[in-house]
Amino acid sequence: MKSDSKENFDLRKFFPDEEQRRIFAKVFDRSTISAVHSLASKGYFDVLEFVISTGKEAHVFRAVDSAGHFRAVKIYKIETTDFKHMSKYLEGDVRFQGVKKNRRDLIYAWARKEFKNLLLLNKAGVRAPLPIAFKDNVLVMEFIGEKGQASPILKEKPAKDVKKVHTALVDFVARMLFKVELIHADLSEYNLLNKGEELVLIDCGQAVLNSHPMAKSFFERDIANISKYLNRHGFKTTEEALTEEIRSKKSLFKK
Ligand SMILES: Nc1ncnc2c1ncn2[C@@H]1O[C@H](COP(=O)(O)OP(=O)(O)OP(=O)(O)O)[C@@H](O)[C@H]1O
Ligand SMILES: [Mg+2]
View 1 (tube, protein in one colour):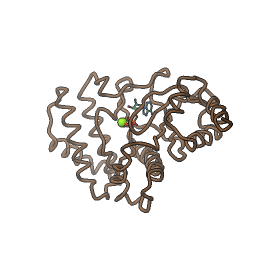
View 2 (cartoon, rainbow, N blue to C red; view 1 turned 60 degrees about the vertical axis):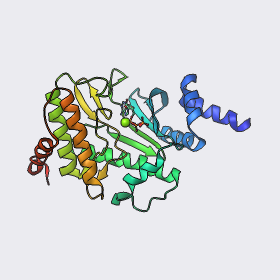
View 3 (cartoon, rainbow, N blue to C red; view 1 turned 30 degrees about the horizontal axis):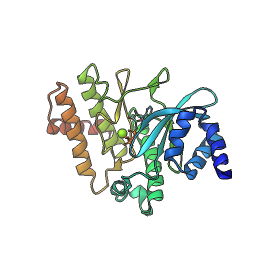
View 4 (tube, rainbow, N blue to C red; view 1 turned 120 degrees about the horizontal axis):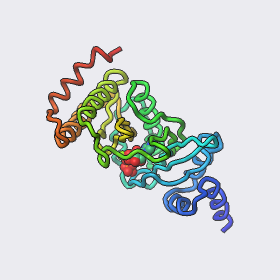
């Protein structure tokens, strides 16, 4: 009971809301609490206000810092059922060679990988959340939303002008490929936020460098998803045409 009360004490500090505290305590272990503690003590956020999304692999919270700035805090579940698929994206990425294969180390590497990928996306000029900090399985990043309301995914809120989606996606993929040699590898209407008609690319843990042995097939899958989305929304194109448009940007973006 003693350790219980300590846990409750710590959690109460980060989760003033009882319901949110209960959600967290059900899913996360002590080491996650200590990572949350460590990031909060450095001032990256003050409290975790509520869950924006509960998924198979991660929960995303809206947090707020002492100055009242919102943050998004993504916490990967250590007990994620799908951790084995992560090694496919980690092995073969030269930045992550030698990562141990146990569940915890893989998930920590995944969070670190998402942080680094977000840095690269921002460097390339792709609109994506600015990464702020990470510790173990906890990632703090820019909150994407308006007036405190998290932006919906493109799947839930299709863009008013599909032509703009086409232009933005060709630009995003070309910048990623030619400026920082990155393939998103899970590009779809589920991982794009529609922030007042501006597209924001999220969920970058799986993104790999172009030197990854499976980079080509990941790239082709991304293009196929984009093509399907655009055609379904009335913008007629093909995978070949999209690939060609992206290639034609090479001289613009290549260093
Ligand atoms: N920076 C952010 N700002 C606002 N909302 C966010 C942000 N990052 C993620 N979200 C919200 O959280 C949801 C899940 O995030 P994300 O796609 O990164 O996780 P995921 O890996 O798909 O999680 P899972 O597969 O476990 O559902 C998003 O669909 C979005 O609603
Ligand atoms: Mg996602």
